[in-house]
Length: 247
Image (cartoon, rainbow, N blue to C red; front, side, top):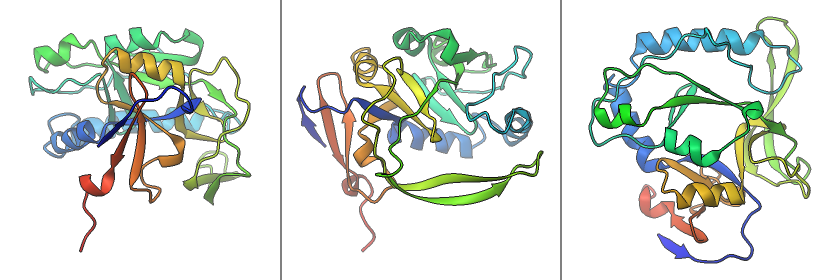
């Protein structure tokens, strides 16, 4: 791991991701059925999938979740595990500290309730909500990006659609709406981006479980060196040291 303290030359926007350390531990707990059991995952997943596909096919943003939508029932029994940000299947959890630090406009995001009464005091103290990021802005320069495409059939309308995936290079537009702070890329809504000032604010607040990565080094794209935003600049991490290549 290398710390690189610099102010000049930072990306204007970062890809929002999950700290691999938090994600690995969460996966182990999930495999043990301690967080979101299979029955609960099926119940909530079915409701979310139905809501997702029921929205107009031309609407690229995630649907507005109604207030009577079923709250996911989760368990975090480990006293020492209560990160500010974590991903669980179709939902991402955020703590009260992270929500207050993000300070996002209500129009672009929803914070929805969860049920964690059977969890540790540390987890309950986080006052978790699941976040539905609905803000979308054109952000990717598709001509300069490298990716594959595949076609799929909409399960309700039967219409054919094309989706971009397996990005090998992410290139951002020269101009992105200045109102964009935490948002989904309209060209590929799986990508959540954050403005640099917002990323810096979150890092200075000490929020855990969340990372902001340079789009040039997003994991999974065959690059061993990854660059992350810190409170003072950037950090570089060699993933070959984290996961040594097979001999």
